[in-house]
Length: 161
Image (cartoon, rainbow, N blue to C red):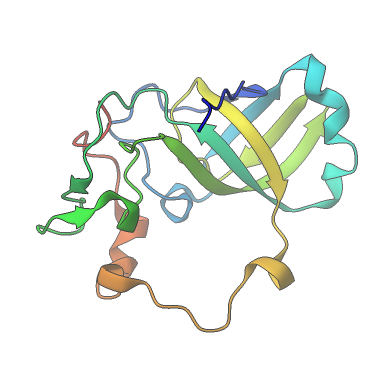
């Protein structure tokens, strides 16, 4: 397969200057504000986005240096396959968050519920559509007993670099 080249379309600005202490999921980042700076070349793509309350942000976890296929996540003491976790240290360190959109001014998006580090490269934006994106019956594997703890956790630095 040919190499895939992805270019950032913008930069995410947040109050978190390093991974350690950053919320690990948007539920733990409730009301924390940030800004998405979309590069001017991509600003036309923001047309009609202001009608959406929530967005998926796809981003590059630029501070992840190494990856392992087996990881010990913060909520468990057992090893799990990296694809059964949300660890940023993965073969392709792509992150995804759902954020609340509060305002758009030209190429700047004001957002809330940010759980990424300042300066994170933005790869894509997609609108969150609850009738399409929600599922009625889901299973969440090994996290079933620990998921409520996620909203209280911050990055402890184990997987960031």
